[in-house]
Length: 475
Image (tube, rainbow, N blue to C red; front, top):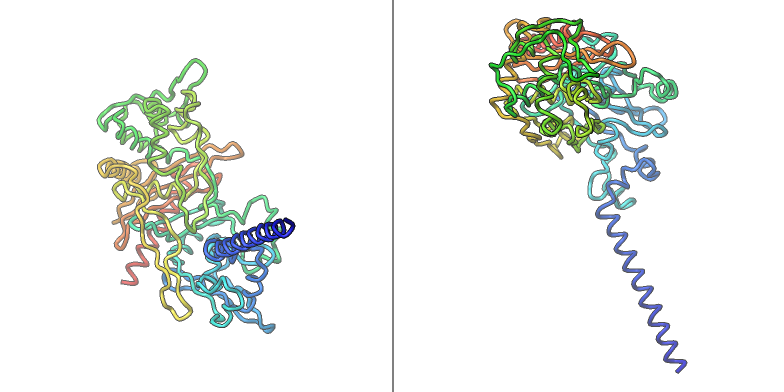
């Protein structure tokens, strides 16, 4: 009897140990097969950090091969990271540091830049038998020639500029001001982190602003799509719109537009017309419109953008719905989102997925990965998009954005003056241009710049003129 119990205990213990062994093997297999990329790239992974000290970090290049970031060996045998364009491309490259972490492309593409993205990277010491002492290079879609022009055009003003290739989604420029010098990020970290002007924030993709009148382009599209108006309807603007007994919406400076059609309303940025259209659309159709243009959808790639905060449409009063129609209420957007909105109209209703990384290259120049352009959304019909685009061209020719006009180039746009609870209004200009080599879409915001037609539209003209001149010289 005693022997039988003993055998049973031994059997149970054996089964338990064998089960634990299988669980351990399964867990290790899971870590090696599924979690290894995350573990290898985890900032707390000391082994990875030690390995990086002996690897020459790969370069970050623009679309023409110009260096945005590279590593240089110093006398101690370790490597220093160099950013030749300093604050001009800091919002894109980000920075890398043992104590402060990796941000921007430096963070997202870290495993590529240090060569830890190969299948052997997860096997620790075994990898050293095959390891190269140089990481891979990351080639971006950014054109530093355009980036420099946009950076200079913004001057000493706070704000952001995004320029896209509307046909591909490639980000050609992404400017944020104020900026910082990533070469000295370690020395000035505490100062930069506490700076009230937020130089570490990439305003182009992470800054959240009320859109103001630039959102009227989308409201016009929605009104036509949902058949709540036509291009022939005549509105009357007495300078105000009485919503109910408690709220009246006014035109800027109490301007009276009188009889006006939809195109003229966009030209003059008529609040009464677009508040009226928003009320006709109602909360459900407004919510659908924001969904159509991707405001609830994320990119799931190297572009770091916060969730776009939208109002709870079902809870909005009529006054708040009218405010949405003119780009106010609680709607907040990033400049990148508004460049994508503009791209939908020049691209016949299609929004391409935005991207920054074009290729991953081996140290020898071999293409390891290549981004494939991807249609992100079919935001509206080609007919509606072309109509809105024609209206936006009229805004530049004879509306509020005449300062953006460039001789010989089709420029479309919409100005915006977004009320700001903490200071002067923000100045917006979004739009597009048909250039000899490409169709571009853009968004420009000048913080506390007041009128978009005065502060932001001339910046677009300067950028477009320079791009055209550069293309003519290189042809």
